[in-house]
Image 1 (cartoon, rainbow, N blue to C red):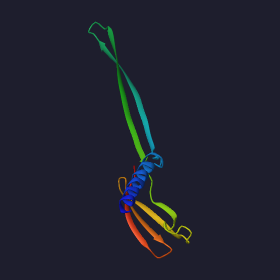
Image 2: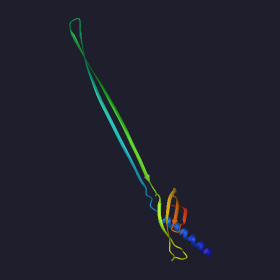
Image 3: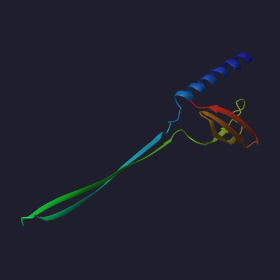
Length: 147
C-alpha cells in the first residue's frame, strides 16, 4: 500500500505542477507608458543702427566738398533652447493573493469539511510566501513558485 501511495502522490504532484504551469498560469499584466515631450524655443532679435555723417571741407579756392559717410551696424541675437522631458512607467506581475478553501477528509468524504483562508505574498521574483488558517484552528506556512 505504501508504494502505491507514494506513486500516486508523485503522479498527483507532477500533474499539479504541469496544470499550474500550462493551464492556470495567470496573464502577466505589463503596462508600459513612455512619454517624451520636446519643446524648442527660438528667440531672435535683430537691431539695425544706421549712422550718417556729413563732413564739409572748404578748399583754399573756395570750393566746398561734402563727404557723406553712412554706417550700418546690424546686431542679431539668436537664442535657441531645446528641452526634452522623458518619463517611463512599467508595472508587471501581481501582488498579494487571497483565497478561500474547503478541506475534506480523504478517508471519510461524507464528514463535514474544514474551511480556511490563504494568503500569498510575493517575496522575490516568482517566489511567494504562503499562509493558511482553517476553522479547526490550524495554521500553515509555505513557499510557492510561479511559472
